[in-house]
Amino acid sequence: MAPELLRRKLRERDDGVAARSPMSFFAVDVYAFAMLAYCLLEAKQPFSQDVSRRRGIADALSRQTDEAVMAEICDVGLRPQWGETVDTDLRDLMSRCWADDPGARPGFADICDAMMPKSARRAVRDAPQITLCSATSKGRRKTQEDAVFQWQISPHAAVLAVFDGHNGHAVADFGAECLEREFMTGRLQQALLDVRGANPARHLLDELSRRIGRAPPALAEGTGAAATIIVVSPTHIHCAHLGDCDAVLYRKPHEGGEGGSLVARQLTEPHRPGTARERARLEAMPDHAVIDRETRMQDDGIAYPFGPFRVYRVTEDGAKRGGLAVSRALGNLGLRPAVSSEPEAISVARTSQNDVCVVLGSDGLWDVAGVDEIAMWLTESPGDGRSHALTAAAGLLDMALQKGSQDNVSAGVIWL
Image (cartoon, rainbow, N blue to C red; front, side):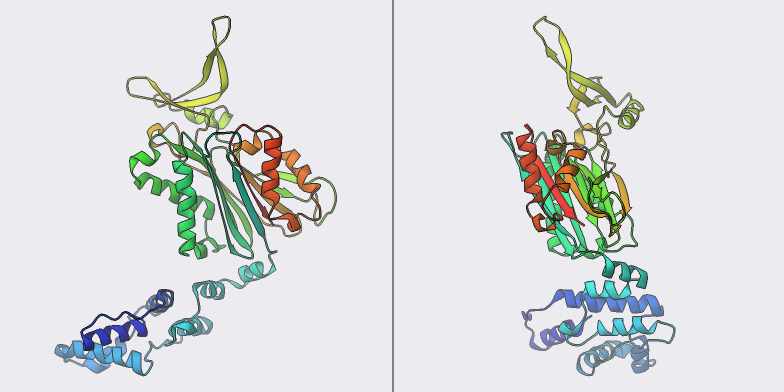
């Protein structure tokens, strides 16, 4: 327990009144983290020798002994003693976390940086700074079912997400708002900066699916959203997606090259029931899913297939339910397992000399603007694009609307 908490506890005991003085709980957590690290590294409880030395065989005096140790922690700076087997730099770092002054303790960002392997630390230092922007518009639709989220974790790391709702905006809004709450509290930022971990974009998407599953059924029983999350770390571009919000990495045509159109690398493949992979997955569960198209009656009195292929869940009585143009999505709990919540993920190493930007958009953008067309638009942008970074996403929205998009349109750009 941190000294400031112990002092408050002792003061409350002596005064008989609950203390209300302000306190930095982040600093308290840093102190507790260092104590936990001590237990793991030394394989023993902190202060165990001090308590044993004071107790001897008089267990009846244990309470007085514990309070004596608490007093020494607060009054004379008693701290656990490190052995010789623990790395010196690590010992010094953990000892700084035990500073009596909460303001003198390092933050978790500093701790992560200090504990990072030297090779990874060098990669962070050498990574170019990034800029991101996003924009969304209901376009020609009566309602807005898209939502976007962006967060700059550090000069070298960021998160960008686009949610394209269907049958309502509830799930799209839930996803964006949930991410905002988590990043505002700081619970996710350091985990996503861990360059040694698994794909953090997939982690976020899986966590959103779990939270939607625990929410009241009214949230996502009949509604859902396509979702794509991009996490850029100092060394990698991580992407995870459900549905058809596509992401494309644009690079210079050769190492450090100038001039010429940008080269596009698709980071996502749309989850639509008409694609070969998704059709094979759905056809493997004939008792649960069926692929079909809507029909529209023509002047000759015959109903002809119309629009894209759609996925339907087969109910126990053999009826078809649903009819989504995407075969994977957040939410849509009433259409499982036909509509899957299993995301696909990819991680791509960053190349500082080649990478230009990542463009992420809803189908309202990509249905009217091709990958190569956007590459040309980026190439012809004045300068290197960074001077227009904050307006690039709005420019893509204007392009989509001018080209006649009939859907909600959302776009985000991460300049690398």
